[in-house]
Length: 154
Image 1 (cartoon, one colour):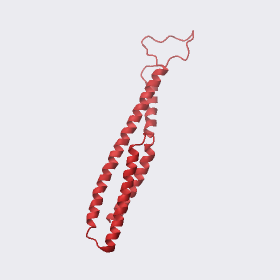
Image 2 (image 1 turned 135 degrees about the vertical axis):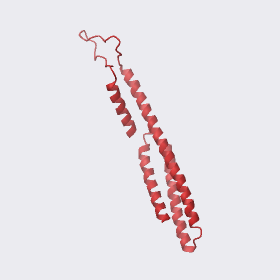
Image 3 (image 1 turned 90 degrees about the vertical axis):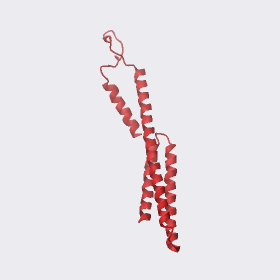
């Protein structure tokens, strides 16, 4: 939503600052000067079209950022899966209570990894308007997963 607002605002400034184009006179009257020859008149339809294009561009940009974020998080999840496998191998030789506690930690880690993966799946299916709030949830879940991994690794 932040990017959409920024793009729309930028487009508004662009429309205001466009070259030598001037908006048409408010109403034709006897005293109103005729348009200068060769000068393009901007209509309400022109503005609607350009604003519509800007909104579409902003949505495309937001969707692109969303897809990039999903790709980034999925790579982090793959890396975490490798780290979890390394921890499993590290704890394979443990015995009795130590092994039980180690496996509990790994189960917790796997559960949190699964939650992040679920949130990413939900996020990737969300609309461009809803993704900012979901991104915060994923970031929080990822931080929690990373913290759990760091504690388990030590």
